Length: 237
Image 1 (cartoon, rainbow, N blue to C red):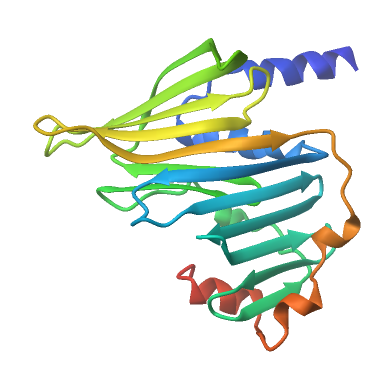
Image 2: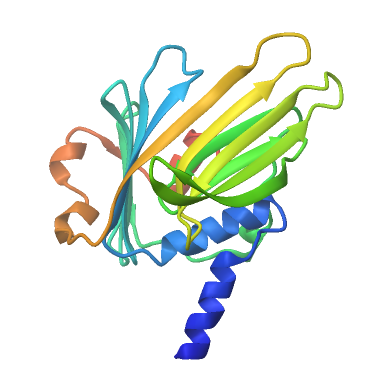
């Protein structure tokens, strides 16, 4: 037991070698959470819209919701035996057993050339760019009276010399993010704030089983599709 605990602590303190491994660490530590919930508020370049994500993690149960301007966009849930997703703008949903792991999906995710992507899903966080960001530093500090780990990752545009920088704050003992800020530092014009995301996190909670199951009243008059059909409809294949 002591050996297992020591190994876990070493793993969580280990500095990721690159951004892809960082995302693996984040997903792994999210998967360990029970009684956990968070709500992320986003500011930045969203054309005046207010975007928020909220998640409930109670391994293996999960719930994930995305809203825009207070209106639901997507809701995902699983009780470990059945999962569902609702796309509110499209008025479609599916309900199926969880997908089996596919080794073909284990390869690192890559961004398209000259693009940047930052997003959350039900069990992880994506922080992608091309050129790929490199981890520049990781240090312990105090933010608003709370101990955190501060990771900085950067990518330089080889054409313009502009610098994309992500500053991410984590729990001191796990790769659980609490604050993400992304800027572009230009050579010849003011700095752009791309996104700032702050989490409100709650721990050691007890959840009603019903929140991880599909509520039929939410999909009245919606069209039921398959998981694969929904993935294709949102550009996933």
